[in-house]
Image (cartoon, rainbow, N blue to C red; front, side, top):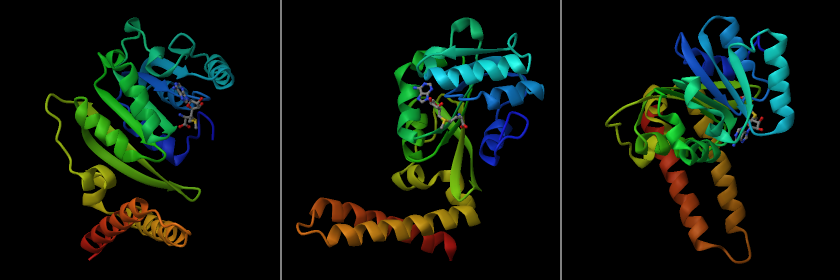
Length: 235
Ligand code: SAM
């Protein structure tokens, strides 16, 4: 992968960055996403934020190499602290991290999202934490995508600011309201795999000398929930 050839995962994130927007890509690593979007004329400019020095230097190098330093600023900063009022950021992308970390980053400096209307988020795991953040912080999911690449599944969640975002139930938070409604082949395969994995964990837990009852109850409930969804939408 490079800025001219994004992975399917990052290309899907790029698809949902609005034309002409000012983007902050938080946890940018090589800055492939903002550089790709700027080279294609899709973003007017923005910020590439990174908390670790090595990746930050990679981002800076990439931006300079492509002659984009007048449009994209690399900043060494923790999460949304990379965004300054003068940047006029209207779109934030956070990709390739756990959902808990993404929700934490967004919550920690929430005031930095003041001018932001669109969030494009790609959690590697823990997607429900991201959906929970969105519906409790004035952002409405407008679509969800699931893509598969190199044996991994990735969910991309897109949300716009809203006064009264829809409140989702536990099932929708876990499976994703849009992904659940579409239940395409990638979604079905993901949850069949997750079901098998959870059953395996339950078997291991049950074979322990002292069986932890709470864990067994939790895993059993999880299995029941996945089986119910797969039966309902797979029928
Ligand atoms: N966003 C790129 C992508 O999706 O391909 C890179 C993903 S990489 C796995 C995650 C990056 O996020 C790492 O470079 C890491 O240093 C950075 N990161 C983790 N926590 C961060 C934080 N609190 N603020 C900014 N960057 C962070």
